[in-house]
Image (cartoon, rainbow, N blue to C red; front, side):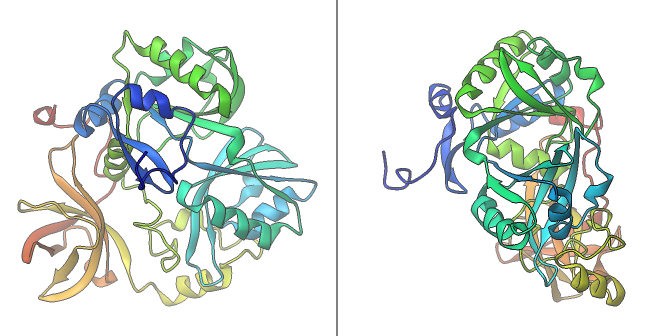
Length: 374
């Protein structure tokens, strides 16, 4: 084991990734597969058939007790009181200045039990923040070591998963979850994902994750299911315009600047960051997240500078050559006056400025992929 990897955590599927000859990389303190057969091939498998992701590095934090809802409401921007049992909600946890601690999904199991799924890089930080700011209202427990997590994503995901599951998956609607059995393992089955395709995220006991992986690979083998690494996970989410913490979101960026207004309920009672977000909503934002499509050759990469009229007006946060669309796309923050759809901008790539245009996101809508990109 190298010096670079000896201190990294590994998921319960680590040996499988090695056997599949995945290229392993350090990511958020974990050794994770970035690709197996190639990013483009894996990306298109998710868009056309089905892909299997190891996302066991993600964190889970449980909030429980008679005042669990009050605790959740005090630290999140969305309105958790709207949730029914078995429902999932995308929400954000903010600092008092409105900057983002993390963007998370919230699961409601009952009035006295909720669970956050949090970004791997933020698990410890999130746990400490939640405990410090809501631990006096409800019990806060980091249960990340209890769960493995697998995402099965793509147009055939329901058909493949149904072959190993005891539930009627057609009854689980988008952003809903049920507890059931997959490949003989008790699991939480959630119709959610980070790809823009239909799919499920499955939570199961850490030591049973391997059984579920094998069951799904076997069930999907005749359809052409593929294991998918972090590389394609990133290109898939970027085509959808989904933010990534550390790129589009951080402690110096608010949900309003990131265009996530619909997940910020300023009409709900006080929550962490509300005053700052209300003030920003009144006074206006200083930067705005936009989608960009390159008009000339070149791929926008994180931290590349954005120019308009010869002046620097922003910075790229994420960029790639879209495998589905055959176009170079990116996201970045610009001064609001340069954020309108159709605005021509310049990206500095290797000391040269290249033309780009502000476009609507998501970049990709199901079934719109160019045949040439296949």
